[in-house]
Length: 84
Image (tube, rainbow, N blue to C red; front, side, top):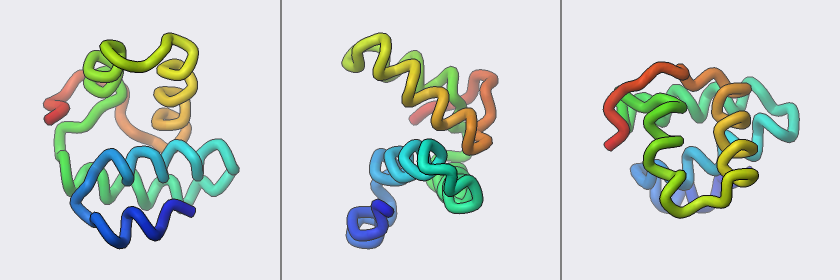
């Protein structure tokens, strides 16, 4: 799931986040957690709160809620950290 884009652009963290969210909603939690580990390698300070602060400028509130819940389900830490 999402492997093609992640494989073609391995340092493109948006693709990794999308894969994490999709996998968590599909119940593929181990794969989602692997994506979180990769995301934290790319952006060590990544947190749900940091993503929310960034994405609330362009995502609809319901989409943002679903997206952040997928990140939480996959195990991305909640507390504030460096997003970029």
